Amino acid sequence: MRQEGVFAVWHGLLFLMESDGCEIPESIDAREFGVTTSCIAIGVTHAIDGEVAVVLTDEPDAERLRPEFEACLATPNRQVCLFNTDLEQLLCLPVGSDQTRVSVYFPGSKDRDIVVVAISS
Image (cartoon, rainbow, N blue to C red; front, side):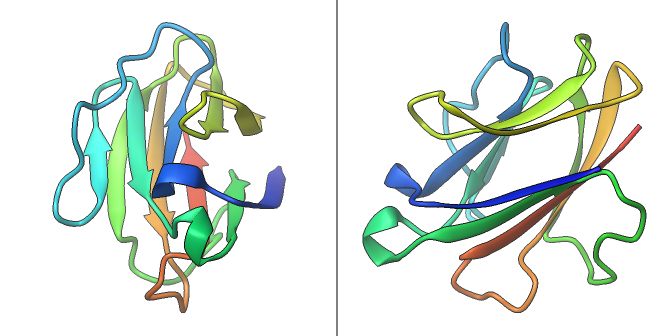
């Protein structure tokens, strides 16, 4: 399954998590990622500089590039959703496990205006 959209991302930050009970990271690292067991913060292009094309997918081999970031996310409600900083849900996919592997790619985009988030159980 695959969902995608183009968004103006105020604050240049997206949150990947379930819809409730998640601990949002207090800060992001130099690579512009922050992580807790229940949320991954992803630094992207700020809305002032343009829109961000985002793909959320569980399709195998979504990207053959080396991921910029990989982590495991707790998904007890068996869903992974992408939110903006106002916690408005942008994209969402069901998952088959209470632990989900996440890989984040910026294919051909040094400006972080194209983001692919690949998930697997």
